[in-house]
Image (cartoon, rainbow, N blue to C red):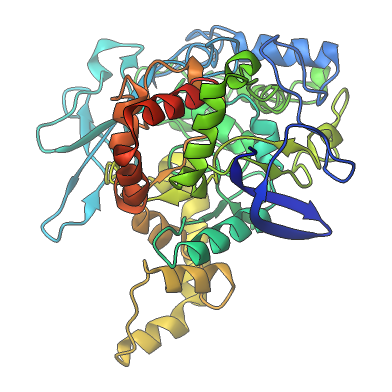
Length: 486
C-alpha cells in the first residue's frame, strides 16, 4: 500500500491535499531533487565554484587577520555542520537565556563582561568562547529561563529556500482546516536584509528567524564566530578587538570592517557570506536509506506515520518554486533548485508542541539594530489605526489563529516583534530527512532515542502522541523502523 501523505504540488497554482505517494516519477510530476552524501554539487554550482565555496565554509578563522571574536562559539562553519559531510548537522548546541519580568513577559538577558564595565544585551545567545578572559560571558543567576538549541542541518536548504511563500501558507491553511483548528502552524514574515523593505516567510533556524541563506550565513558569522559583514556590521562588543588602524581616524571599534567583510575585487566582489550561502544552496538533500525503507517493517511504519497524524506537520513532499538566488552569478545555476520535488518531512512552520523554551527571537541579534529600528518606525505608522480601534474597546488577541491569518492575508498589519513574541513557545517543525544520522533529537538535543522524542510531543501534537502510545509494540517498532530509514 502507498502511504497517505500531505503533499504540495505547484502547477500554475498551488494545490494541497492528501494524496498517495510513489517514488516513481510520473510524467506530470516535477523532477526529484538531487540527494546524496557524496559531497558533490546538486547542480547549483559548477565544480570550481563549488570547491571555492566549500573552502570558505571550512576555513578555520583566527583573530588576525580574519577578525574572529571577540565573542564566539566556533572557528569555522564546518565546526558545527559536518556529520556526515560538510554542511550537515552535528551534536553541537548553543546556549540561550533570559528572564521573565513581573508581568510574565520575556526579557533578553543582561550579561556583564569586563568586570562589569560593559553589559551584553539585545540578544539571547550566550557565547561559550572569547579571545580574552575578561570578556568571557557567564550567565547571571537572574537569567532563569535557559535552554540549549542543537545545530540545524543545512543539507537541501537551497531547495527549502526556493519554496514559495504561498506554498507554505497553503500548507498552513489546509492543516488548520483538516484538523478543525487544532493544528495550525504559524508563519512569520521576516526581514530579508539583502533586499531592504522586503519580507518573506521564515524557514531557517529553530524559530524560523530567517528566510534567506545569505541572511542565515551573516547571522551565524557574527553571532557564532564574531565576524561582521555587510549585513551584520556591528560587533557584539569592541572590547579586546585588535587596535584600530591609525589610517582610519575616529573609527568606532565596534564597527570595524573586518577583512572577511570586504568584497574581494579579485573574486567578483564577493564576501565570505556570499560563498557560505552559495555552498549551502549547492548541498544535496539528505538521501534516504533505500534498503532500510524497502523492508516490510519500514513500509508498515510509513503507513502508521501517516495514519496517526504525524504527516500533518511533518509534510513529506513539497515542490519548490523560484530560487531567490536567481539570476545567480559566475558558475551558479539557480534553476537547478527550481520546480523540484523534495521530501523534507516538514512544513517549515512554527508549532506549539509542548517543548518550546519560551525564548522569542531577539530581533537586534539576528537583523541588526539599525535595520530593526527602521522597521519598527515603519510599522508604528501603519498600525496607528489598529491602535485607535483597540482604544475604543475593540480588542483582539493578536496571537490568535484568526488574527495571525488576517495578518498573512493582508487584512491586518504585520508586526515582526509581536509575531515573534507570539511564537516564544513554538519551534519550527524539524525536517526529518537525514534523521537517522542524528544522535540527539528535538530542538534542545535532550532526547537520544526516537520513542522519547515522540512522547515529548504535546500541544498541537498531543493527539498524534496519544495514537502512537496506543499502537501495539510491533506497530511502534515498525514506525520507528520507518523513521530510522529517513
